Image 1 (tube, one colour):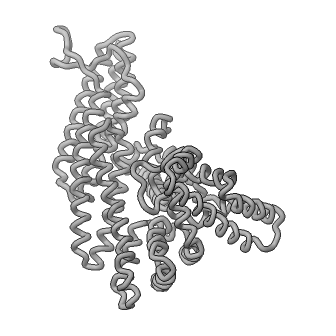
Image 2 (image 1 turned 45 degrees about the vertical axis):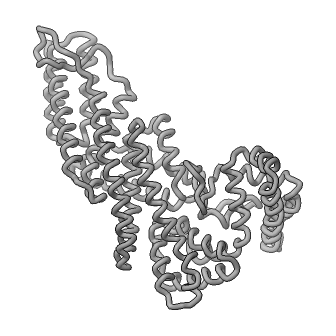
Image 3 (image 1 turned 135 degrees about the vertical axis):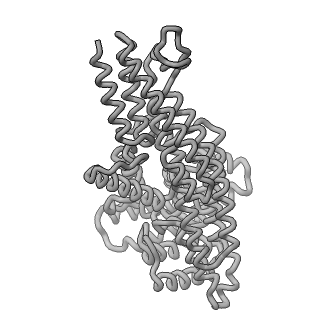
Length: 486
C-alpha cells in the first residue's frame, strides 16, 4: 500500500508537532511493527489490524521528514548557519500548532530569522562574524571555535537590540514581524535571544548526552545536576532551559521526569533553593500530556482522519505510560492522578473516534432499498456507481482504527466493552455486506456485475483487520464461483 498525497498532508500537522526524538521513536515503532508483520507472514500467523498498515510507505515518508530535520543522516558539512542553530536543536518542532509554548521553536522560523540577522543593520556584526566563520570553514582554517564564539556574542548583542526596540516601540515590533513573516517567528526570535545567553551550557549538555539517548546513566544524572546548578547560578532562566532541553534530547521525553525526581530529592541546599525552576520540568511534561489529550478531545468535533487519530492516541498512550512509570517509581500519587485525568479525556475521545470510524466504514458499503424482484432483504448493495477510491481508503483506515481500539482502550485504562462492541458491529456488517455482494455477483449482469466484483474486492480489503482470514478466503471462493455463473 502507498500513502496518497491527501494522507501525507493530513499527517504533516501531527508529525510536524513532534520533536525529532519523538519522531525517531515513532519511526522505530513502525519498523518494529513491520518486522512483526514479516515474521507473522513467514509463520502463517494472522495479525488483524496490522497487516493492512502500509508500513513501507509510512516509514519512507517519516524517514524523508527526519532526513529533512538532519536526524538520521551522517553529519553534514558545517556552515555558519548550521553551527549557529545547532545548540538549540533540542527545542525545535516542525511548526507551531497553537499558542507558542516555552522551549518550542518552529523549524519554519529558522530561515527567516537567519535572513534577518544577515540583512538587518542592527545585527551587522553578527553577519560579519558569520561570513568570517564560513570563510574559515571553507578553507579548513584554524580558529573555528573562536569565530563560532564571536558569532554567538555578536548575535546575542544584535538580537538584544532588536528585541529591546520592538518591546519599546509597537511600530518597530510590527516591522520586525513583517520582516520575519509571522508573529510566531518573532516569538521564536525572542526565545533564541534568551537561549544565546546560555549557549555554552547547551553545548555542554549536547556533549554530555547524545542525541536521542535511550536512557541516562547514574553518572549522567550527577553530571546533569552539576550542569544545572552551574547554569542556574548564572541565570535561573538558563537553568530552566537546560532541564527543558532534555525533552528533546532523550529518545523518550518522559524519561526526563526521572531527572526531576533526582534533583527534587537531592539534599543539596542549592537544589532546594532552585525548587521553582526544577519543578518547571515536570510541569512542562504534564503540559505536553494535557495538550495531547485536549488535541484528541478537539479532534472529536472534526471530520475523522482515522489513521492520524490512531497514531495520536498511541503516542498519547506511550507518553502517559512513560510518565506513569516514572511517577510510580517515585511514589508520586499527585502526578499519577494527573495522568489518570488525562487518560480519561483520551479514553472518551477514543470512543468517539471508534463511533466515527464505524460511520466511515459504512460509507464504503452503500445500500439502497430493494425492488420486489430482489433476491435480498429490504436493503441491498447500491451498485449504481462504484465507491470512490478516497472513500475506500478512509474506510480501510477506519477498520484499522476499530481493530486496535480495544487494545488502545486498555492502555488508557478505559472501558473496553464499548470499543469491543464497535469491533463486533463492524465485523458483522462487513461480513453481511460481503455476503450480499456475492449474491449480487451471481445475479447481476454487465456493468453492475463488474461493479459488484470490484466493490467486493474493496470491501474484503477493508475487512482484513476485522474478519478472520478464513472467512475472507471463503467469501472470495464463493465470489469466484458466482462470477463463473452465466
